[in-house]
Structures are given as C-alpha cells and as structure tokens.
Length: 381
Image 1: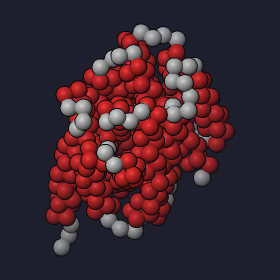
Image 2 (image 1 turned 60 degrees about the vertical axis):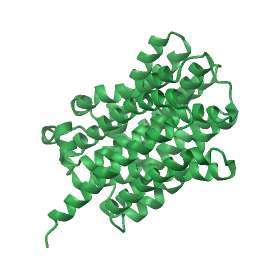
Image 3 (image 1 turned 90 degrees about the horizontal axis):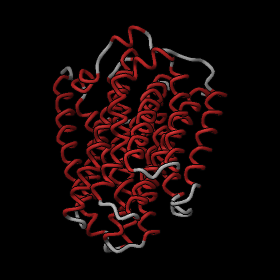
Image 4 (image 1 turned 135 degrees about the vertical axis):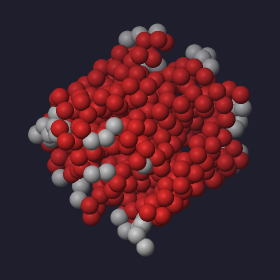
C-alpha cells in the first residue's frame, strides 16, 4: 500500500504542474496582447514533450529502473518550471514547456503502469479512480491558486518548486525498491501495435487529453469573450476539475461491478451533449457552474475508464508499452487540441471552444461504439 501511495503522490506533482502552468502561461501571454493562436501553440508545447518521449519510456525505465526514472522526472519538471521566471523570451518558454511535458509524460506512463501492477483485480477500478482523482485534485489546486495570487509574481514558481520537493521526499521515503522493466516486457509491443489492438481505448485517452488541454488553456479566455471578469473566468477551470475529481471514485466503483465499455460510451455521450449546450449555458450563470462541473465529471470518466480497460486488455508484460502508448495518445491530444481550439476561437470566439470539444467527442464515440461492437462479435456464443 505504501508503494501505491508513493506512486500516486509522485504523479500528482505532474497534475499540479500542468494545472498551474498551462493557464498561468496562457494568462500571461494574453495580458501582453498575444493572440489565441500563439496561446494555443504555447499550451501545446508540453504535449510535444509527451509525444517525443513516449517511444523511449521503456528503454529509459529499463536503464534506470522505475524508481530512479520517476525521481529524475520530478527533478526535471521542477527545474523547467522554475526557469520560467528567469526569462521572458517566447522561444525559451516554449522549450521549457516541452521539457516539462517530456518529464511529466514519462512520470505518468510509469506511474499508471505501477498503479495497475500494484492494485488487485478486485478493486483495480477504484484504485485507478483514486489515482485519476488525485491527479485531478492537484490540477484543481494548481489552477485554483491562480485565482488568489499575482500571476506576474515569483510566487507561482516558488509554490511549484516546493510541491516538487515535498513529492520527491515522500516518494523516496515510501518507494524504496527500484523495479526495472524486464526483457520480456520490453520485447512485447510497440506503440503502434498497442494502438491497433485497442483504438477505442486510445481514442478515449486522446480525446480527454484534448479536452483537458483546451479547458486549461482556453476556457478562461472563452469566459472573457462572454463578458466574465478575469477572476470569474479563471474560476471556471477549477470548477471543471472539481466536477472531474468528485465523481471518478464512483465511476471506478461502477466499473468494478458493471461493464466498463458501457460506462465509457455513456460518459462520451454526456460530454458531447454538454459541450453542444455550453454556449447557451454561458448566458445563464445559475446553470453554468453545475454544467461545467458535470462536464468535468463525464469527460474525466472517459479517461478513467480507458485506463481501467487498458489494464484489463493488456498483460503485465505489456503494461509499460500500453501505458507509454497512452502517453503518446495523450501527447497527440494535448498537442492538437489547443492548436485547433485556438484557431477555432480566433475565427468564432463565441463557439470555437465548444465546437472543438463536440467534434472530438463525436469522433471518439464512433470509435468507442465500433470497439464495443467488435468486442461483442468475438465473444463466444
């Protein structure tokens, strides 16, 4: 249990870092008059780090062991965030954001593998849900901090550095062994083979990554376009994340007792419906906040259920490859999401963001339905 706690705590630092820095950088760029497209490009930089490192997660883990790899990633993430306050050069910021994404991608891929390996089958759904909930709560804390502090001060960076140091200390205390990737594990499956095996699951990861990056980077800007003041617009992100965190454990509990594939489709359908209604809800604050919380819950459910089903479909010797593939899918979604939504918002400020989410959720639902139908057809009669 102590090792499982250590893994969750260490990966949580990636949640806090993304929750803090993605909207922080977006708001700083917006305050200096930069376009939504540039904001989207900068928000996509961490995702590029995910994509670039995903093919090498297994080899890095095999060389260093999982413990030392995760500790190194925590250190790299801390340094890359601290250096944001050292320079204001746009290109330097972009490189630092790529570096943070690379560290977070490796940390998450190995962390998700260990969560699945360390949790018994009987409550794996709840264990994965606790992991995703903790990650989301830390994202929530990171973004909520921005509503009460000066975003142009050194305080955000100092807080992030402190969180990283605490996380590293707890991880070293609780996780004392250094498991490595065995040769048979390294030999099984590439990213492309994993994606071909379960395109429905990886489309779910990609979709939620797109949703997450778009919400973190552009929802505050979307709120400003609809006439909300900066403090209120910034608060929209924590509300979405709070909804995500509140219901994931319940979704994991249901997944342990019912068909995760059915819940998978229901959560995608809910996300599609709410995203289409979002422009209308923006004019009714008394409905908006509940709708944003529910949107976070059902979209987060897509990711939780994708991870649960990855653990069900792939054997223990393929888990690092399977979760590295999830990291790759996450990177692609996070990379294209802000770019597409930034361009769409530039063209249609009042509808660009929700339309991007709606189109992405529709594509995911088609693949999920196809995957469910294929799984049903291969079941023995």
